[in-house]
Length: 107
Image: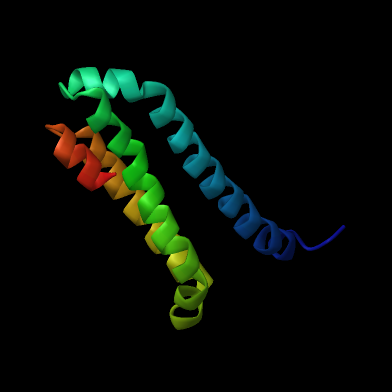
């Protein structure tokens, strides 16, 4: 039987990484299926609603190429923790958005 502490140390980062990936995919799916409700709640037109998803994709397109450099400058662990914290904060801010412009900004 392998040492439990060593096994946990090798498996736990993988589980945390998988959970982070799952949360990102879940967020995209929830927003995509809720765009009409978001638009109705924020009194936004259809062309404005599409910017909610577009803003997320633009941010993703900017950050993904930078991630390799950022992991070398900081560390993979630090970058993952900072990204998870930023994701959590901006998700909470999206929940508190008072109009479509702030929703797009926080997204």
